[in-house]
Length: 254
Ligand SMILES: [Zn+2]
Ligand SMILES: [Zn+2]
Image 1 (cartoon, protein in one colour):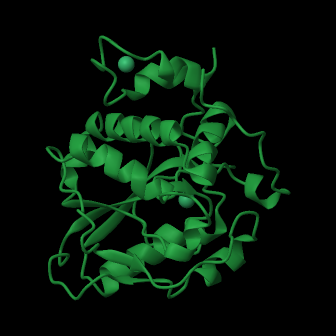
Image 2 (image 1 turned 30 degrees about the vertical axis):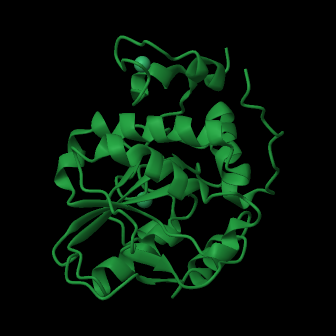
């Protein structure tokens, strides 16, 4: 059975109830999980006992800790995330919202954060999609998460994207870090973030450049004490240096 076949059949589960949120253990067979010895900062698998990400080793990461909902970006998990990202397919968005909520609610560290907020988007980046996928996933998960963590209600959002970013898929690591510089800002002048422990949501962590730039703004302009990230999937090391090939389009109808 495929991952989405299992997810669509996932109703009346003893662990999850009627299927919202979905516990990570219920999809464990389809995951390539982050191992316990992975780099806590960027979730990359160690090579020769150390983190292989040069940006992380050089201290460009402003994120202290990265939590990963679905492990490394591979196989069915990758196809599910791309179905949401590329077309904002409603069924993929809902499933990812349920998986995000299940992961965070089963994670004791959720109580360490003062606020959860998503990486914002620029309206030009909608590119024909009816909604912004990450925002839709966040809004889908937020009602289930609110008892455990305060969620940015986005009106106005704490963080905005000031300009459209070039398509970063398949770009080199260094280009990604320079492309995002200055792209984000606080949505309004506020003291509410001072001293806050922020959890920042993104869909895919490729190099970490986008989340790190958001973290820089939250700390330097907003006064946040720490910023950690929660991402749906982590790009495994070196895969992003290879030619990017789009996986076949996936139908989420079973
Ligand atoms: Zn379940
Ligand atoms: Zn690292």
